[in-house]
Length: 227
Image (cartoon, rainbow, N blue to C red; front, top):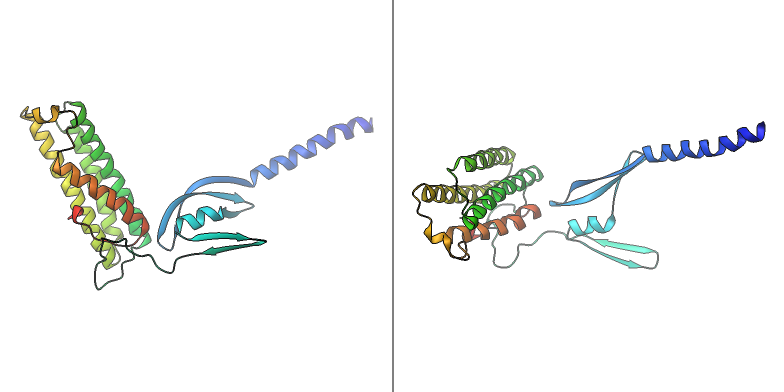
């Protein structure tokens, strides 16, 4: 009888220990900010503590990592430098606040979605009265308002101006396209690549690319496409 009980007790004990281990671990994808640099990484939760992959951490911070013997050397840049061809706003700190960075990136994502919807309509001749675009306009305006609330420095304010200009350009383009559809004046969009020669769209695309690079890195830069 004792041998039978022991035979059942061992696997049961192992199952209990295995279940406890599972309950104490887990992982999720989180947004991580390191010295103003923002990126996505997997965060592991083990025994109530948070861990991230060291290479992911170095990548987000634009640092470097090297291995030698039993030593790992990690180096982070002392300060971010603006790419050639772009100038920082003179007379103030070029760093963006973390709260503003988060809000501005979210705003840009909404504006991108709006732009993509407009571009698809132009390329595929999707009819519409503009009511669907009103939803995008309202969402972008609300997101921009949250970015305005998050402003806490001169650099934030300068970046907000570029983001505001960008939204206004997309809004004006949207109104133009809706007006042309209502007047049935869309013959010029029947070519093979209707967006190639659309100057407003090209400006929007250039500004989107610039802001997508500048805002997550947390260092203000200026660019003519967003003016």
